[in-house]
Length: 242
Image 1 (cartoon, rainbow, N blue to C red):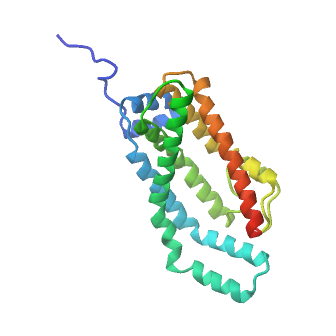
Image 2 (cartoon, rainbow, N blue to C red; image 1 turned 180 degrees about the vertical axis):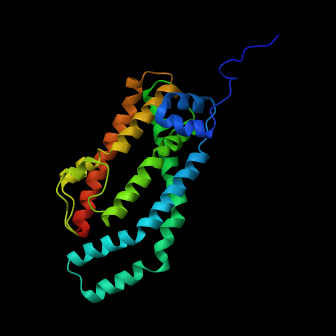
Image 3 (cartoon, one colour; image 1 turned 90 degrees about the vertical axis):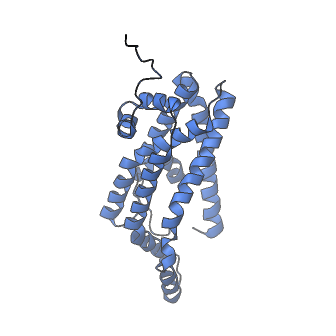
């Protein structure tokens, strides 16, 4: 006599099902992660995409930086020195740091979200589940990173390129600092909002609560991040004359 499999005994979603599910049925993906958390595969995918983008737009980024410096009135000799430094082998340092940088950011975010979730949602989750949430929501990069890369390559500059509301404002000249309105609208990015929604769904699954309640720590942390990002950008712009 055969026995029916319980929900926990059913075959889990494989990697490809999770990747597709993040876009089509995210709740099912996070329910699968709740039972069997893992973060390594999407981390590898994200790092490969980030390194690929850096390689493709590296020269454009250097050109943009040189144009900004030239607009500030540095001499041709100084500009030539800076250009030589930027085109040295050190320009590839970012490629080496990408895997470390992505992981460090994710580890910090996981700790922050775990603390906020445990304090505000009246339950407990695990660090591995929250890290898996961040990692799998990063699969949105399969769309966002190639899209951003294409737009930069097509335009020949990273200035005025993005998927946020700041692109609706008039473009800035090389070396011109971002206005407060630019900084505010830049926070409203299509893929950032999408990721916030995924995090909300994930927390509602992990903490067995409603999405409206799960949204509270996400929204509060996002607002804090926006305020700090805008304030620090203004501070550094004033300090360095950018």
